[in-house]
Image (cartoon, rainbow, N blue to C red; front, side, top):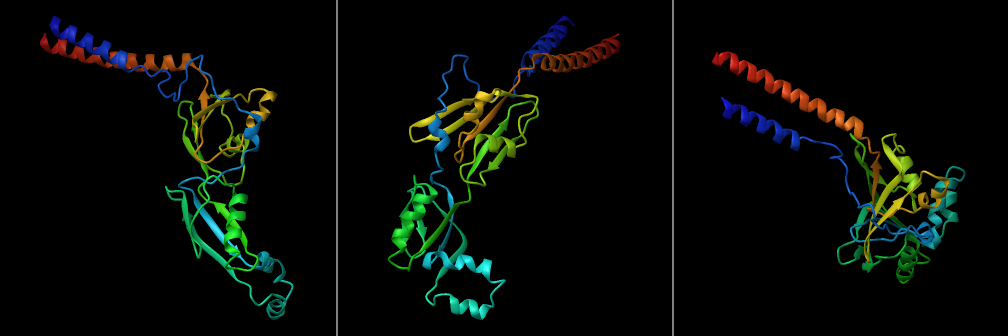
Length: 267
């Protein structure tokens, strides 16, 4: 009987030790003396640069994109008259397909084949493609876009959900990303927002403090595709301890009831 009692007590202690869930949901912790990378003012002016695994949209128009104005004037001018006004050598290429930036940094475009535009901004890539396509078309007008720009946002509070936030606009800032995700809840800290970014020089980890007006410059940091934004939760020790104690007492009550039942049977 004593052996059974010792075994039960040992099991209770084991479960109590391993069932502690205080702050178990917190991610990406850093030491107290951790030195974050500085959010320099230059980061607020960094335009998005095309990277490997991006999926691009590509549209080509000739004659400096005169076809683009058709949609604006077709309602006021008859089609026959419009055709007489348009140059006869107009060519437009609009394709809904996505063009993948491969691991070798190349993109296979129509007509011109493989082109390397990794590391270029959208504007720089458009200018580069225009110079190449000028050999085949008259005054080419390029419209290039990135359809896979997104960041990963983690709400560190208990019950928080991770979200994938699409960067629908060029040069979206941290403020805009947080607003898209619904802002910062009461369970999270506006003082500790970690931004993790992969660069050619390695992983950069920034900490944005938006609790004061001085944090405006940090909030205007331009997001890059595949950034990880982690909103650190407020440390609420009291409620988490109460939750753990309630679960432990519930378990002990169940064990006690089973023990009393077994004792009554043995009598």
